[in-house]
Image 1 (tube, rainbow, N blue to C red):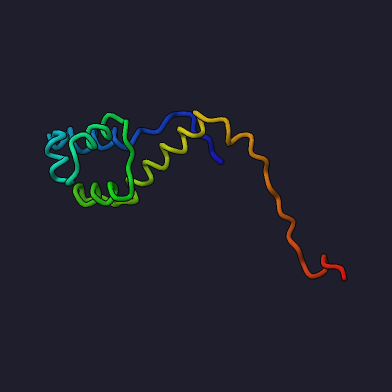
Image 2 (image 1 turned 90 degrees about the vertical axis):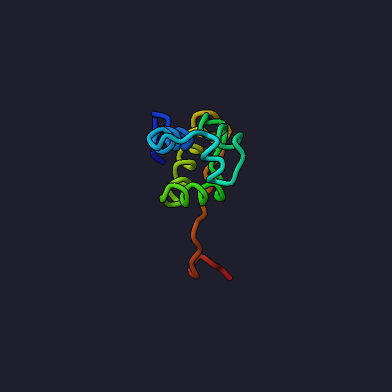
Amino acid sequence: MRVRKRQPVHPGGILKRHYLEPLGLNISKVALALGISRQKVSNLIHEKGSISPDMALRLSRAFDTTPELWMRLQENYNLWYATHHSDEWRRVQKISAKPTTPSDVKD
């Protein structure tokens, strides 16, 4: 696993800086276009919300991108966050399965 030291940009930050600001859009316009509440858009661009598959589909349609783009951004952010804010996963022991072949089986 490649460990990234620098935190990736939250997808809401991408939405704000690369779409809303250059297009001169405000939260109300985006919420109306996406068919969601202003609160959901606000939470997302203030990096308090996350991209769901439904939201990824809405954003991809509205901004002519792909849903995979938005899901990858969220996944990268989630994995970085979990890696740097949780130690529970480090306690998991590696499981190794020894492959069995017919010669390993004894009657």
